[in-house]
Image (cartoon, rainbow, N blue to C red; front, top):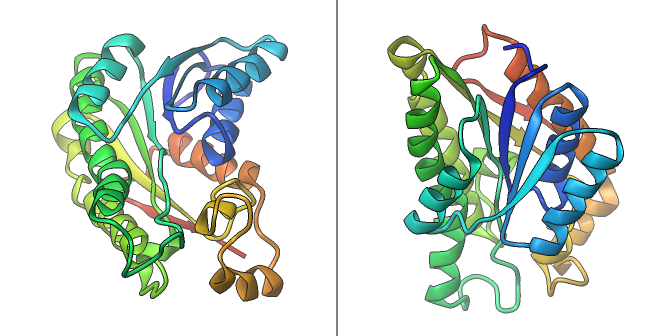
Length: 240
């Protein structure tokens, strides 16, 4: 798909990968709907886009609930590209297995149900416009066990399987669904593995052993998945 002149919705766009995707889409000529529960971060993303003469608007959106998803798509209007990017980690305060049932519920509803519901609603919008592209943010953590945060790992494994299972939407509705699987990325989520200020102790050896990718690298991959019409049901890994 040619990005120039299109409209895109990006969730979790108030920081990190979502912000980088939003900026990259705007730079490629798309109008961007920035969606996040973080109003301050979301508005900052909009400011950064507009600072470079891009077109963007902010929507406060909680993708963990059906009500939040429905409201987001109503407010976003017609779009051609949907990036279901919002995601959170369980963290280690407390971590597995002491974590509360409420936190488990929130992680799964945000990371997995949010992507599935976001795709479901996107199909309605994109279908009426004759087709489009959906990009889901998974993780390399979904490719294998993650003993210190199995909830996050499971949530991302589900996103990978779901995305691959949506390949037939290309034949049915001219909608391509793909996923990007980042490795460790230099975003605020690293600190959120721990107490929100410092990363979890279990992550520190991995941080020491590698250089985290910058969010812009992931955004570049996302743009490639959008532009390459041969990519259907792909799960593209981006890691060092």
